[in-house]
Length: 340
Image (cartoon, rainbow, N blue to C red; front, side, top):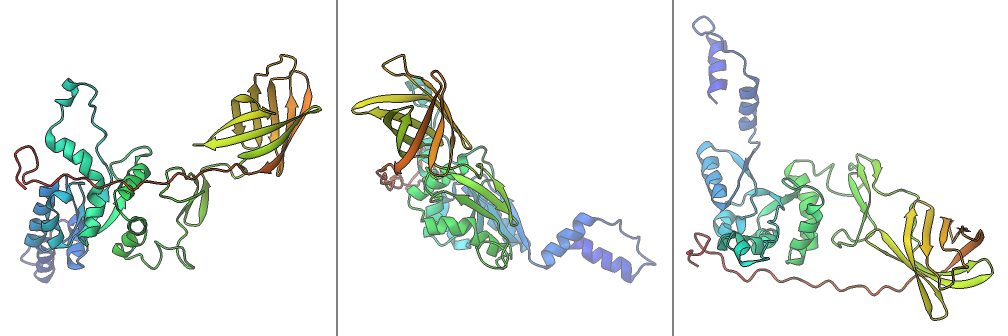
């Protein structure tokens, strides 16, 4: 606060003091301190977190931590300070153990952290430490994959959802505008076709401030299921399946199956190829997706085709197994020669 005090003295006794050059950064810093606003200290390991507490106490700072993912190693000492942690989910990648020489690249502590890192959010929750989850330090599509990994390792979905929404809104003083789907709140939403914590669910659109940004075309409709197919004057059954945004299909005639190849669905357009036993039947198909049917042309013999939906394909829902937390103990210091 020396800048504030010096500025005040200069204004009080202008005749005996040289005016200070205005420093906007120090003014903002002084106001931040006066109003007890938070300072975020970035940490790269558990010891840096403990040092941050010492700095905060020495200078009387309201300290938040940008977490390292190593908090579980000194969880008792960190829990005593009850910090708020902004927690990245940058878990280490799977070690390459393809041969004995590759294995020598990894230390014991590195291998343990690879195994224990996904447990870190649940460990913070178990010790009543407030935190918000962030995608900081992550690239591509790792965030949701890593979050689901922590959920599988006993982080509750209700806590994970709160740490993405209501908890950061509360800590930022924006709990009356953000974090909930409620009248008067900003509509910042992620819309999926299923459970957010199910890897198979796909994001349909993103809403920011009430404005929608589609991730998938609005006219995209699901054609998965069983269909009654007519090609010219011949009747078949058509089965269409969808997995990870890709369709596969089979045409059935009695007990004979014909696999569809090069099956493409784009918006309301569909095309495929099929290899029949007989070369006299068309093998290239294009068509359009309508509300309750598919229709188009089989090009090689210029035949019209029509498919009417007969029902949804029965899908056996895969039971999600709850992964166990790591069985390793935390040593001090962490590594080969640490003590329990």
